[in-house]
Length: 162
Image (tube, rainbow, N blue to C red):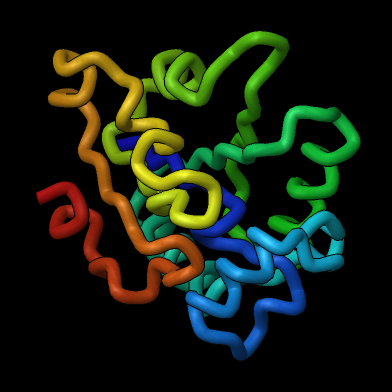
C-alpha cells in the first residue's frame, strides 16, 4: 500500500498561520503574507506527523509531493519534514514541464491525499482532477480542506482506503 500526500496546505503551512482560522490563512496566502514564502519556517498542520506515523506503522509506504520545483526549495521542504519527524518517505516534485498528474502517474499511489487548493484556484489545481478516468479508478482520492489538516482522517489504513 502506497500513500501519496501533498505537503504545503495539506500537512504543513507557513508559520504565521498558526492559531488562525482557515479563512484567515487563505487570505494570508492570497495576500502573499511574508511567511508564505519562508519555506524553512513551515510548521505541521495539527497532528499530521502523528497521523502519518500511525499509517506508516501499519506497513504503508509514505510518499510526499511538494509544489516546490527549485532544488533548494525542495531540499527546504525535505528539511521541514525531517525537522518535525514526519515519517521517512520519498519527496517528489515536478521537473521541467511536468504537471502534478505526471508525477502521480509515475508513483501510482493507492491513495492520494491532497487539499482542495482553495487559495490558488480550487479543484482545477488539484492533482486528481487532471488524471484520466481510468487512472482515477485506481487511485483513492481523499481531498481535504486546504489548511484543514488530516487529523480527522481514520487511524486505520483499511478505513482510509474504504
